[in-house]
Image (cartoon, rainbow, N blue to C red; front, side, top):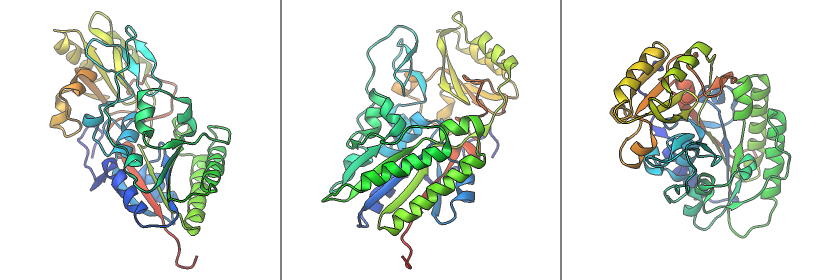
Length: 363
């Protein structure tokens, strides 16, 4: 497929993850370890993880962490959990917020909207002890992280947080060892956040990242040999980018208070604008001209027609009326200092792994 095309989804997507985790939990044994690896693409996992059983999954649209992780623990589509991206307005006339941090980015502060209460895999894990090792997630508060971890005990990281891939995996392994050493009367469901994404945004899938992923697999294989069911999956992949200052200037010429009620929302390689009433057509035409050859610009309602996202009710209030989906590395990014980004429709962004390590018959 081309970047501008509709997503040719594999047979499974992130909505399937809770059921797969619960199925693994039902196999018995000590419990299930889920390694939630932020930013790992299907292509890289297939190259590096040689001892795992691998299944290809489709991410959400947009391919951004806020949307994808919530889908992966609830099994709900974006149109159900309503986290349409990283930055959006939660209600018509409301401010623009960063849903992960809770920061108000523009507009007057207002009470936060709750994330719809959808059952998580942790709440559905009957007869098990659900525990989340959130690591960097422990620094967050607010509706999004509460919805993501609802039903699980939050175990704080004991090892230092770091962006270095080797230090990251060593810290994750030590935290997992401490968690599984606790005596329990019920099986453990341990969900572990592995934040490779911070490194990947700056350096991509370089040698340090690949070596760290290989080390993570060695730990996973060892845990499986000790009787644990070990799964890993990702939220999205990343692609190289080279944000063009000229295109950023053209975006800014359209994203103005005269034309738009709020600054643009979205994140990375999918962004949208909130035109003032009556300005929708002008904004769409000007943005399409400004980004010609570098983005697909379309009305938000067209996302449903393309099979990307159902746009109605609360979703329509949260999305801007004009959406831009990157089709070029030069697409103007909110953070032009990044070397790799995600959000759009390329295979590298949308296709992610589900890995399973099983106990060897020789163990």
